[in-house]
Length: 173
Image (cartoon, rainbow, N blue to C red):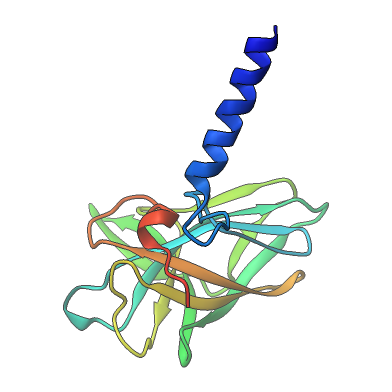
């Protein structure tokens, strides 16, 4: 029993040492960032590198409404002068295209909406410069009832299909 206890403690200590950086503080792990405003929880915002200096980017994330009434993502900002538009992918005549959703994106009570490639997403437009892999795009989201929340999008490579890990995309400023 004593050996199991000591082995368990040793494993915990080794894990703490592995997560500790040279300054003796816990290093960032790959846990995705999350942000909360009222009953709205925003998790793991991410984007892709914009090819050829394009000054816009697509934003993805998970939005959960833990409240008792529906709310709506109605807009936001991105990287200084930039703005945010809510879009959905629509297929017509065999072609997929993005279409702005003027009324915003509804998140029902108790619902989680995944903004992902091929589905609903946000467009970050009028950016100062095209985002590069490894950078962070700062922005805000505006919800009709919950209000405004500051978020940061982790930027991954051009072809990625899911959020980059925090270890690969996080930089301290």
